[in-house]
Image (tube, rainbow, N blue to C red; front, top):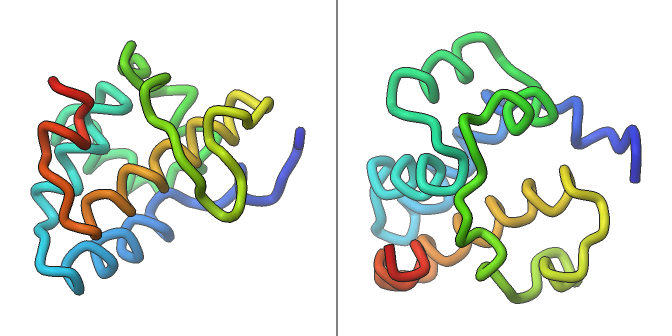
Length: 117
């Protein structure tokens, strides 16, 4: 999937959609930020900077301080594909994030979403 167009999409473009999705289900932006930060290692300031700079998803994950070591525990189907079977590392990270956002929106407990962290 090298060069997939989603890689060049701005994180600032998808972030409001994530917020809308979780808030529509009664969850908060703070909970969303918590799972993004858990997955990527960004803190609040770095996350805000990535949004302000309209960083691409490719750059967002490349610049991430570090993917959480428990990210491989994220399993399930997103967009009809099992996240644990995605071969492209960048696409897998994007889908990990999508899966976490879905879990927040579905009302899962944060300890479960954060894989026991």
